[in-house]
Length: 80
Image (tube, rainbow, N blue to C red; front, top):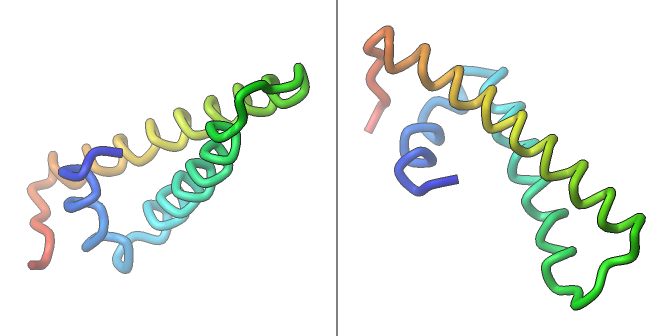
């Protein structure tokens, strides 16, 4: 996730449980995927699991962006 997006998201996490859920899931999936990046070779099962995690992460990011879009559309300003 881009730094600019995270700067907008973090202040909203305590206000929006749905956003917090998706953000935390995104962070956890990123950690799991990093485990695969350190391997020089993946087994076929690891490849399948890596692709599954990538799809879940992308779907979660889509939901995060949808939620952020609602905030931006409504003109909600983040607390700074």
